[in-house]
Image (cartoon, rainbow, N blue to C red; front, side, top):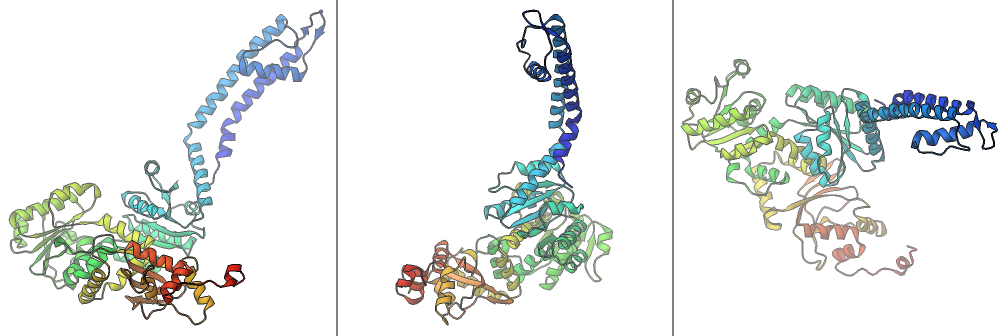
Length: 567
């Protein structure tokens, strides 16, 4: 895919230009050959330059004077012919220009040239999104608000137009092209050093595999984030080196499991995805009684793992005999329509404590929930919502918990791209257990507040100039992380600030003791606290005066060498 817009313009305008040249040439030649007459009766001939000059203003303005002398009748006759001849030529040329402007091929070439220019000028890190839909649109919006740039590759021109109408805080260049053409990735800038990641979240696992493979072959250093809903494709993606493989059904199963076994860990995870640090009533799944899961597709099979691991008694209802036949030996699967009263009664809906409508049909899921509530009004209801557009209907149905796969994928992908330390923290705490979760939640609420903010920082000379200078100037001095918790107005008091996680090369430290762990260059740190506390910590890391006061409890006196700039 090359930019040929200039070549295309030349090619399309070649014939109109020939017509103009021929009409002008005939007109000029006639004006030179036809003799004129001076006022004193002498015969003369226009030079080629005089003829060219006359024809030029005659053909373009149709308002002229006869030069250098009044024309003879033969000259006037020829001029009349030339007027109509050149007008025809101009009309033809203008028509060709209008046709050219409306040419879709030329428009595509110009758009390609503009896209290439924008990508070429990008100096900040950027992320390539393959495909533009409601999912990627919201992720790009979140990233844009954080100042992270995105580039989109989309095959459908209508979606490109839709993107151009979005009011993103920073421009998002979009390329119309098929990702199966390797040239498209090159044009999107995958080879550039500042291309941070490639994201592919198609519902088609085969397409995601293709994107991941192409991306890794073209730039092995780029981070590849893809969706895989089937285990075999997930394994293939990891084999070819995909960095992040997201399975929305596994995320759902994990959340159901955490809700049953470690609600505090679920609370922390949801908080790091942007929810308040509280466990709502609807987050508490019943621990006792039987669960009825409707649908034995990809989500049903993922839920099976989570429920079994949590020791919950469950039964499946599946309409497709083929899918039901895939159930593992010993699994209880009733074949039939889950919104059928007889089938629900057969599954003991009256005695069940929870029903999960997990099919890929939103209308069917709503129908199942309504049918179950009619028989057992006290049953806890969980429904899968497949499309964000159906949110209003699901909200009106008063379902205890709605699982929106798109929202899960949006939050997950955004965290991976913009808040990698928070994403890593969530993975690390998954197996810590309820007691660890309770203790952490208690610490967060006691030390900070009921809903702390989080901030990620990298300790380097740019973000921690003062710390770097102190370490260089004073050999052996080590600064504990606890210094960052001190207040700038009174070093003996502490800000509401906690260190959740430090990544130091291959070493990872969860909830470190800030008094014992020393700051090192290259550390990546996940903080929890208030905005004011983050501001103080950033000042202390950046400013020598603030750091000196927070560390030693005294004002910093600058030496005469520093004042003269010789130290």
